[in-house]
Amino acid sequence: MITHLISALLLQATTPAADALPEPASAQTPPATLQAEPAAFDREAAIADVNTYLNAITTLRARFIQIAPNGSATRGLLSMSRPGRLLFEYDDPSPIRVIADGTTVALEDRALETVDRAPLRSTPLWWLLKADIDIATDAEIIDIRSEYGFLSVVVRDPDGEMDGEIEFLFAGPELELREWFVTDALGEVTRVSLLETETGIALNPRLFAIPDPQAERDSRRGRR
Image (tube, rainbow, N blue to C red; front, side, top):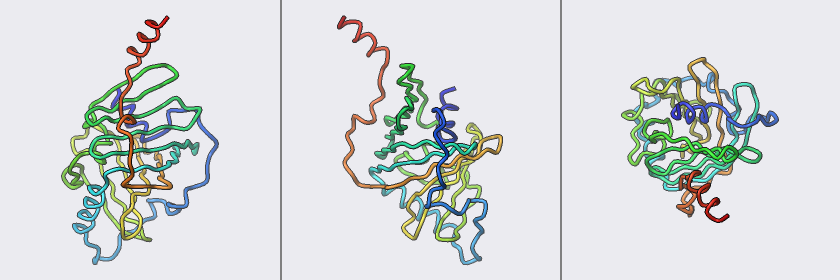
């Protein structure tokens, strides 16, 4: 169940819907309109460049906008420390956080004081967080194409354990990750766009600590 919940957070907001937001300026060309470049496009070189870019990321922080299939949008802050660590914090009033601590991914609901866990390797986050990324080995590449200054890479789970597909969109010759589109088993698409991205910054390791709500409740009872 938790694996599906984590995937859903990449698919759609699990928080009360915010007002619909304009399309991010970074991706005004929908992925469906991307057309493959002429035969000169070097697929293997593009895959190598994506691997090089992702493996070079040590830390990353960015604001994000998550647009659900119904057009509603939520915002938040993404923090990443490779390998293995990541934090999605949704802006108020959402109580949801997604935390990866290196081996485990947790879905925390601070309102309900619950934390559900899954192995990191069983979620799509593994493709971004593993120590040595090789997308041609780690995932099944459905499509890779370049157009309008963007490189699109569409992947799915080669073992079929995760439904749907994910399209990563990289911008410019430096191949900066700008957004991803997740298509679920019903064909509905959710977009996550990154804004104000910073890399190589200092991040407190405590950001990626998964809380234990039961221990916190016991601690509060002990202080009474």
